[in-house]
Image (cartoon, rainbow, N blue to C red; front, side, top):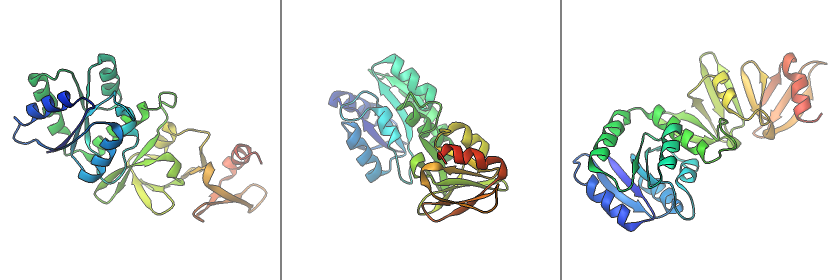
Length: 250
């Protein structure tokens, strides 16, 4: 399992690397000393597993999770000297946490958890999204990212880049400016976690990001046609028309 160690303390990185090298199925492929470097290394190396320190210069561990992007979402194990940070991270989504100095017995148990999670990409992506949300405590439980699927890849999409969500029978599609992705939750489930001021249901089968509405046209006295920034057009149901006008201050 390819592994990246992220910690601003060289000694801590060295100790953890030495412990990990005793496990034949773990390959440490890189290290990073701060959050910004961690993001660059995650993008460059696509590690399956990241041991992530929470308190670092430039960018915290929570912020690293909040800025994850791309096709590969790693399993995240939190490493910290502060127990309350570790517990918070574990509660929101980290597969496990390790307190410094890392004990070999505890590390072994953590790797057992990691191995059990390794072939569950949806769960891995959901956990990463939960840690990302913890970087914005005022917004919890609102989502900051949405888990999406593109073929065999699972991505974390920023909610600001999502134009709309559309349900087609049992499937829900996430629409962005360039393409659409398959959502991993029901439309109602996603709606509960999105900021209501930004995402509005315009139909029982559709949610739109009001920041991407570019035009509203009347079809009848009670029906509207909205055009989004990518030129996608959606009909607003009679039930939702008055609510859309109020949000847009029409």
